[in-house]
Length: 309
Image 1 (cartoon, rainbow, N blue to C red):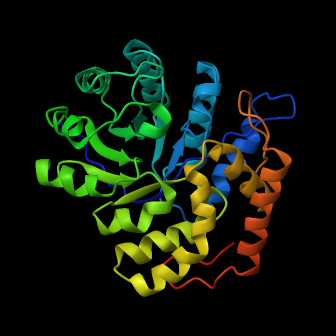
Image 2: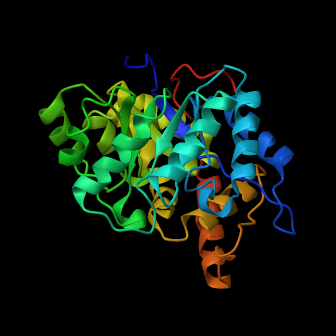
């Protein structure tokens, strides 16, 4: 039976926090999660790309999932990213996620192997049929080298646990192409920060966001304005936000997002190798973007968010 879910709004891809020796700092990670929920986000993605999934051991992934579940305490959905080398490994991680009791999984194509379309579909089908958790399929061809096209997604309509599609190719036409093929079968999420308003205009019901880690209220406000068709107000905020949103499309997006988060006092900029610290000129560039953003930070229109803590 198809799971009944109501995923919509901004789901930050939560950063995983590390100590100076690169060991997992679960208390700091939980603090980051609590801050996001306090500031009004609609859900959380843990162990995603920004959460440095592939730099975590299975035991660490379980700890992060458990922290997300405990911190959320039913206030918002918690979805765990699954990025593994084989379908078997992905199933094993999905089983651990089910034990923890998260609200769903975000499933990436099998990593490293550049698969053919039917192999990509087979991976999603195999994993989704081995879990009762709701599944969000994740497409990010620039990063994961496998393109989950609307044709691939449409071939999975019979997989009842697959309920959502996250599109990070940057081609917003795909939301329409998929809807033309299968109607409203899948909830659609934007996955690339700097095309979020365009994605919402094309039918995205949610946004897995990187930069909302640093500016959760701005992210949630932008999303709600666009969903409500308040485009004049949305564009003013979008134009302010765009230089930072572009950072989500860089290969070093995790380092950039964590630095912005650090500047906002929400977490540390430390990433695990092979992700190294930004080079000096890159750090200066991001810091300058943040300085401008903070100097010109706009007053947010009312979209129903609770007052800031």
